[in-house]
Length: 308
Ligand code: CP
Image (cartoon, rainbow, N blue to C red; front, side):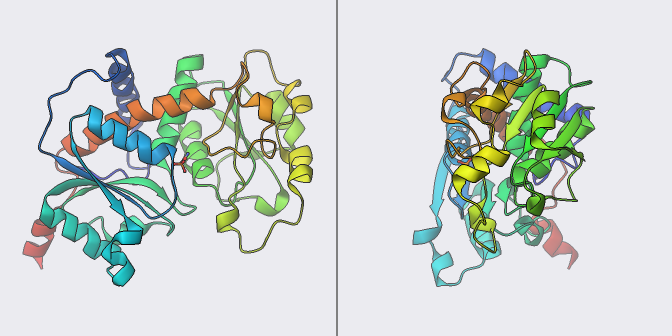
C-alpha cells in the first residue's frame, strides 16, 4: 500500500508505468466486467469537484471496489471531528484507500505516517493535484509521443493553482520547456519554468494550458473585469490564430467560458479538454491500483503504534 500525495516521490519510470497501465485500461472495452472486490474505497471531498470526484468514483467502480462517498456537510466534521479522526474512523470500518480533496495545503502531512489507509490526494489547497498532472501528461503523450523538445505554456492564475504547480514540475522532469504567463500579481516564483508575455507564450507553445481564476483562494477581489482579463490574459479567438500548426489547447476545468478561454475554442479542433476528462478515469484507475498494490511504502497505524 502507498500514498499518492505529490508526484515528487515517484520516479519517471514509475510515472511511465502508470501512464502505460492507464492506456491498457483504455484498450479494454469501456465498462468491461471486472470481478467485484471486497476492498472499500472512500471519497472525501471537502471542496467542490465535478471531474476529479466523478472520475475517481467511476474508476473505483470499474475496478470493482466498494465505494463510500463521504459528505462533509452531513458528517461529524460538522461537530468538530478532525480529518485524522475521520480517516481513522473509516479505517476502523474497513476502508483501504481514501481519496481526499481539502482546501488546506499539505493536509495529508497529519495523516501520512499515522493511518493505515492509502491516501490519494485529489487536490490540496494551492499545493498539488497529482492525478490531474498525470492525466495531462497522458493527454500530451497521446498527442506528441515524445516529451523532449516540447514547449508547454501554462497561462493564468499561477499563484493559486495546484494544477500549475504539479504540471510545471512534472513536465520539466520529462524534459519539456515550460513557459509561464499571466497577470504579474499572480506570478509564482515557486514554479518551474520561464516567464513570458501571453502573446509570446501562445506563439511558442506546442501545448497551451489555460487556468481558471481561483477566486476562492484570493484574499482580495480581482481588480479588473472578466472582459478585461479575457482581452489581456485569456486565449481569445485572435490570439489563438497565432498558435503553431499542430499545437493544442488544454484546460484542467472547470472552464469559465469567455474569461480564460474564448467560448468557441473550448470545443474547437485544437481543444483536448474533453479528452483530458476522459483520460482522467483511466489515470485514476491506474493510480488506485498502484496505491493499493504497491508494497511496503506506508507504515500502518498499527506498526507506528507498536513503535511508540
Ligand atoms: N480539474 C479539476 O480538479 O476539476 P474538478 O474541480 O471539477 O474536480
